[in-house]
Image (cartoon, rainbow, N blue to C red):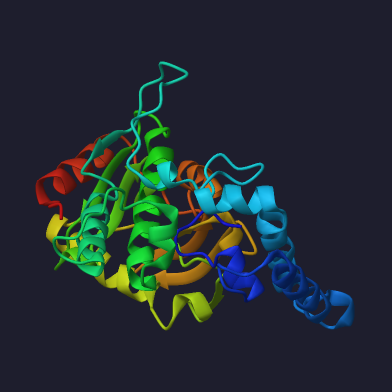
Length: 308
């Protein structure tokens, strides 16, 4: 099961209540296996989700561990409330210089999540741990989505930091309001990139230059990114090489999907694990930025960028 506050829980996948008995779980699992099996015309993705759900809560021990928020087998953090809290920086394994970075990735969404959680629980009510798995899973989807996006931004920022000293990253860049921010702007030898880090809690598809699918719920993220990038480009007098939407690896069928172009900038959806390679190699064959040009673009951005 994807490690995301917005993903369907094993109980939701199996269509049972959290209080269901073990026999009810087993009957629901067997019924869904028959309905979703590819050999009988079922959906392979749904079939896989049902199997993973059963692996998580199909035994009393596994169910108890999941309900406590313990990691899934083979995962370092799935369902673990500590993975949803702000983490201290991990000790570095090498001494190579990191990319220069400005701003606080995920910071605005973290604050928004905590504010909305307190409002949802009730003003004056005790909330010892807003990241408690049971509490988060019971919250409205829009609140869980904010936390999921904060986690996605933080994960992307960790990858950007490893690009090296030749790159500069600005996080939580303001445009015309915090809800319309650009999560990351990255400048390096292969170009200037505007990036959104998204997590919809499920797989998405692309059509006519935009992300689609039930989890997207009618949003137009690439269109919105194009509008926001336009404001920054005008303010800083720069031109973006590419507009990227970074998604969890299991949300895309292929590592990189080129969607088209907006005002000369290539648009693409990228699996998170592929982002460093895309930024180091570029999305296409456009001219690289180097020397004094790179310095000039960085200077303009540094003077123009404001943070949420």
